[in-house]
Length: 196
Figure (tube, rainbow, N blue to C red):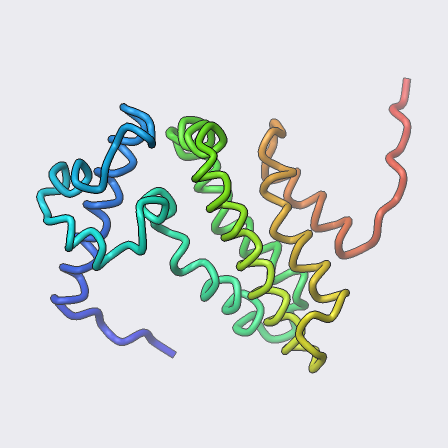
């Protein structure tokens, strides 16, 4: 199934949204989150504060501009997986395809520091994580015809969403993602002792 072509109006809205998000991130990284107002962001993006709020629900949302579509992408990873592909493999592919490029972005460390050093952003990120976990858990439950809140489905959703956090500090992020998903798929085993 092909996606319908995006019209000029939608492209223009998307470009404005991206310009606002880019201006916000640049200012937040330069000055610190607490020292930048929505008005500052609007001026830097050459739009009105009203336009900023047409595109973003609040100041925190400016930092996490890609999160709006995350729930839809997570659900699609489960529901639109290839024929014969199990849910864990679909989630593995999703993390590899979406998170690895983000993790390799040159501003990733600055972005992580911004979030970790700003209590409002840390709290917002935690709320997003819970929402994404609930959404993914519900999508997995639907695939197996069980009630939302099923513990096995909720656990898989939670662990799958934690994979990037576990892989973040590893030298080979791809190998780390693969290893954690292998554990999810095959069960945990004690690590082998190093050979002499």
